[in-house]
Length: 368
Image 1 (cartoon, rainbow, N blue to C red):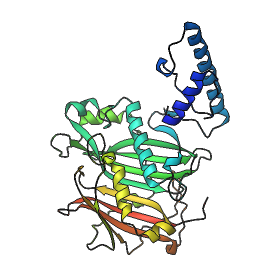
Image 2: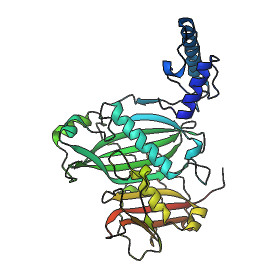
Image 3: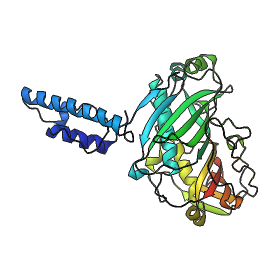
């Protein structure tokens, strides 16, 4: 179960005091360990245990009567995909009073890692199989494509389904579908491509049959795509941005908090860097609908990064409005309300590409 620290501590404090009442309705709590309470006599321990049991029963009942609060995770019935529910917390909400795209990307990353661990892959953050660990192989992101049709607000519950499949000889893909848990509405979709790299040499390596057999048992037997539409935006190539760019933000430096378990800049940090060079008037009048990033090289903790942005002249990947099997966009189709930009992140010192990006923006609707 997914638990947030504040709710966890408060709920256990309530239990420790013996009242059994928790204001965090519907949050499922783990049993308290002895370190949350002093070492009382046996009789008090038994009373505390009874209170804990009663509180857990109340929480379970609340989860059934108040469906906005449960945190659950499981494989789907066919066991080839994984679902998890997340609540939107106040610190995940941005200036539009809704989640940010970074929040969405973090949730995608979280549910993908949880899926890998749930089916028995490594818990070191790399979702590696046994053979991969023996050969010092890891997965690295090659492309990420996210479309958001409706941003969740504070306290909304989002249900995310994810699954992985083979993608050529050197990679795999992972797809996601995001739904509003209370309505079942599809509010976003995403897809990504991952390639295998040798952790020691940092060189790409083909996926061996042995590795493929280890993870394909958890993949759908027939091809399933989050974006089944023909010629959808996730397939479009991203051209290199011409220099000089219309807008730029130079001298970006990774913070310690931006580093992942591999001591490299986390994938989600790149999204924030891309948006740093967006003109403020667009941020004020539009909201991000689609972002695509092609990852070209790793970024180290001591690199200095420039973010470049320019409008893309031809709006030729506007939302088609097709009703796919996984839901369709609900964005405005008026070209005057629809903007598109190209992006480039590069190392300041030598101009090496870190990644290329494309973003699509829709006119903001009335505030919620």
